[in-house]
Image 1: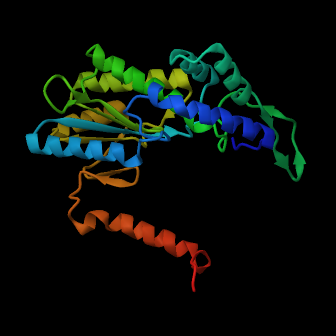
Image 2 (image 1 turned 30 degrees about the horizontal axis):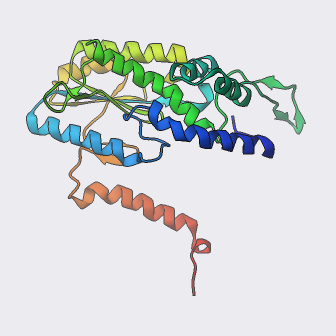
Length: 278
């Protein structure tokens, strides 16, 4: 739903969002790189590029599952959002404010110029609401927490990047999610179970068919089995994450040509009215 709210609410929401933004960095894990001060869109892209490069150089098997969530903002379960606010340590007063700001609302549909009866809204975040980006990060942090717990108890094994047990298991930019780990049946079971559980709890739905699985130094037989098990497409390296190339040679012009072409088209679409001339 799009936010069609009064000025007084928007002013109040901006004040709360400014206060909320000051503490979000302490409650959202470093795997998430969206909407927070000091974190950048390219952070996750750089990390996954390093993972792919390391896997290629060392010959280690690596699976990368690119998750596609359907209409994420519209499907957020309010009960789960309230649970996450409590889980990360917000007090009852703050949770009450968020409940008043987010929960509830109604809309009607114009049919031949006449509005229908009002329909109550039972889930979702309002696009354009200053609070929505931060609250959505809290929702998807539920998936990040589940992945970290799975790694801690040995259910999911991330891709090792150095000695001492350090590994990369997932990266997030809002709902743009990559699951990264060893090529094993156990990891496939863990990914599917965690995503299904997260669907049921949060309301966010995973479109497995639009999701894709990439393998590095993984046999074709295993990839065929894994894609059938996850009901997803098989992807190829290099691929795009957040619109940027992953696994391609950054020194080649061909790697950046699609991005440059996209920028040219965007600039051309603006037309001369946006250009200042003396």
